Length: 580
Image (cartoon, rainbow, N blue to C red; front, side):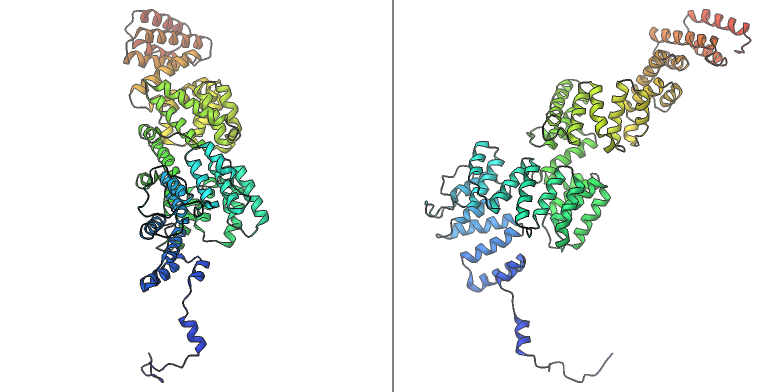
């Protein structure tokens, strides 16, 4: 440690005037905005306002900065304050206010504000302030922005006639063409949107952000590798973009798995500052999806009315938890408008139809109609979800030959998907292809599926039809006593009898008879025992089996037993087969 100084601490070397000017220079508003430092610009503008330099123009610049930070609520409050306090303000404020309301999901209010800007009579729920600008034809803000916001509102209100009116007002300028592309995107016309973006990119190579829009369209078209390739063009220039990194994570989720996607989002979260809030809800939502629903009940419910995907993913979570009623309640008042919404409503109705005895048939019919709508649509018929929908439609109609046509065309994409394999195996079995049905059944890894009675019954039937009755019997032995085990026992007894595998048919009918002394079970057991005896005589069954057959017969008190046993013993004695 140095304990002495050669120069006093207060006596610094004289600085040059040039150095002093650099040191004291404060960036001006335009410089901060050019650098997109909106927080810094707000700080500077607020300082000026508190220093007595405030005016309407300065307030509008503060609102502009908050808008670009995504603080739409704060922005709308600032614009509303201007319309309340000032008598003479630019009419365009109402258009800006309409943009804020639109992004806050307040569509009637946005419509009223936009019409006020254009000098039209406001209709809707928006309450105007007591002090307003004079909206004559000379001051009305009938700008391209006002037309674009009305174009978007027409889409939100599902008003086709109005939409086409504002569509006809669009010009061949950049902003209007981008708006048209966005409407194409929102209406699921992704290829049309891509065509517009690519045309603009050919004319303006420096508009790099358009690559993100193109990548998003390809993502929606399920071309995840193409989406990733296009997105990389933008990420090379802006590697810390929240929107681009989020889309990259979504591509990784589709191409690889949730862990790969989560790693991308973690990179974004670690790089972000503590005050970074942009797209935070979207990132939290996607984290839940990437983690296979972990934290869904904490994150998704508050986002249901903000992010359309949040409602759909919450429905998926409830379906995975077998809470079909909650899933149904979330969707029952939603009129589907996208393929995903139609598909989910179909799945929920199909699940509910299988659970409910009273209205089950009606729900299944609704599900079949939803699946047919998606699978038969021109935009979805050749997509993977579209073909899944047609397979589901024919499955509910029990037209399994048609089911297999669609499932065979997409099975390479679902080799490790347990639910796909489960349905695929059932379809195979339903057309009598039990060998392949068994193979597909055995690919399933999910313990939840493997414990389901439908799985066990189908696997047992496949074993029996493939002459592996012993494996079917072992499935029954592993089950606990219940109504399902009783049903499986009936299936084994009848299918084994039908397939001439009389030994296990006899064992199954024997247990059934002891559980329920129904004369039909005795008749089944009697026929199975006689069948085994015939096979033993013909040399198709080991002679030692006769001992087990006699024991099975002795478990019955029916008087016919003694006669059958006497004949079997007589044959055994004549052929020197030990039965005692």
